[in-house]
Length: 392
Ligand SMILES: [Zn+2]
Image 1 (cartoon, helix red, strand yellow):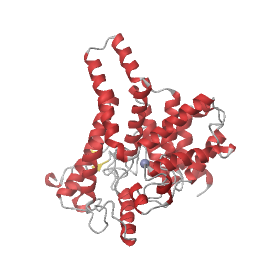
Image 2 (cartoon, protein in one colour):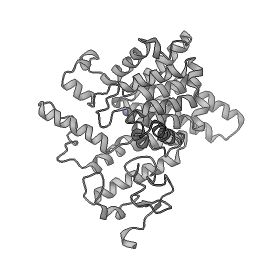
Image 3 (cartoon, helix red, strand yellow):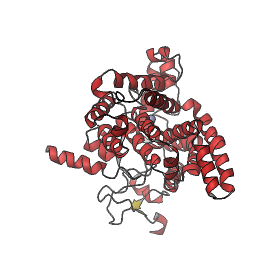
Image 4 (cartoon, helix red, strand yellow):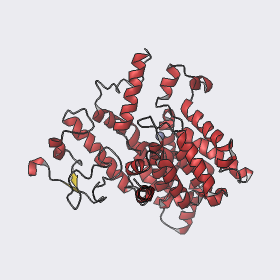
């Protein structure tokens, strides 16, 4: 493909990055698996990152390239496409009215950088695996938040060891340390052992006091009290942690993450290590059941709390469709990611047609994703439900 055509395709693929229906897989294909650099440049420019950090766009590009190069392209899931997807969701949340009222420019930049680096150098294995296998990193970090500690440290090493990509070089000292702390705090929050602690804190320290204040009416004085309450450093940290956790959790899940975990189970069996996630055995796994448990256990409460705070009806609708899709597959006693073609139409929320009735269509990101379906042919997101088999 000629260079200009390839660049045009990339430009088109990043065009709607401000919207929820942005298609990360099209960008992955257009950039030959380097979506993070291109999406990063576009999103960081939109948030004025270079202006705040006083760095050039060339330096930002070098930084993004070195960060992307340190993701493992061979991982089915934890590669730079996942991190670009999390960056996209992070930027989307940052533009919501409630979040804009509370976070300042340095908070926003911390969130964007944390999303960009949050799975850097991920080996495609979980923390438990690294500990059980006695890997060097587990020893270095005393079996505690191994990957998160490693990648946060590595992100700063990669950035500061080469002047050419040191985007922090021109910052005031105090600002740099605030940003540094904030990025580390957010990256560490993506570790799952503290998941419930973070969600409970959001509910108790933010949602409940907020509901009480809002109950008192919408007076100007009350609005001020709400903003003051939400803008305390502790609450801002809590909001940033939940923001990155939600962005991480809704990144495309299903096929890719299952494959990565299947491969871990294979290796555990080969090396006679404890099998950490016995559900993810490629011979016996029911993907629908595993997705249902994941949504029930980790997603539902966190998103209910996040939606109560930020107001995200579109996201909740997709979550609901997604859940119904997996339930439908499970009720049909299917174990795979998608049903045989003849059974599509019987699935709730599954079969949709775009307004131009393209065939094959609206499967781009749905239904095993939390994003709306996009027609591959005409890029429409205005799908309508296909009548079920019973009514045809
Ligand atoms: Zn992640």
